[in-house]
Length: 111
Image (cartoon, rainbow, N blue to C red; front, side, top):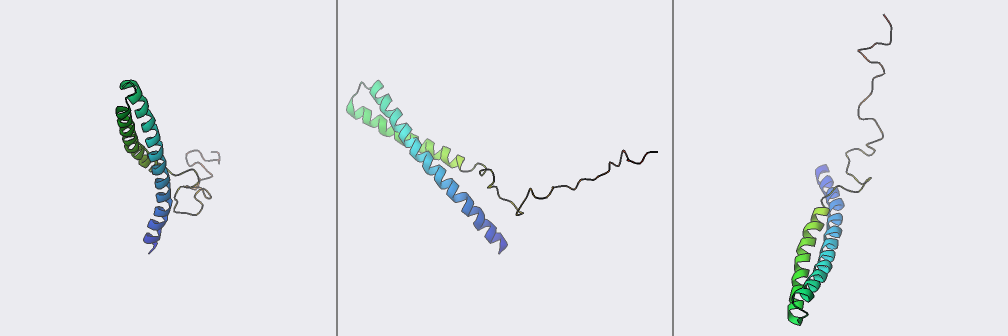
């Protein structure tokens, strides 16, 4: 039961981040690819309408693919600072290792 809740909590944190970054990658890739395709079409085909439209569409499709790849990989990166998953409610509230007051190699009591 607890494992199911943990998976649901992980899914609730991961899915929104992946969706937003994937959508942003798709949108940015399509726009940038379309603009680059348009510019290449104008320069390479001397402004012929059909060829310019074809390179614009090809650039937009290539930008969509590239944007999807980059956006999905960006969704896999570490969460924002302070939003990391943890097994304890306050991981920095207690020290990880208890420190000893006295060094066993150099006792404070003199010889």
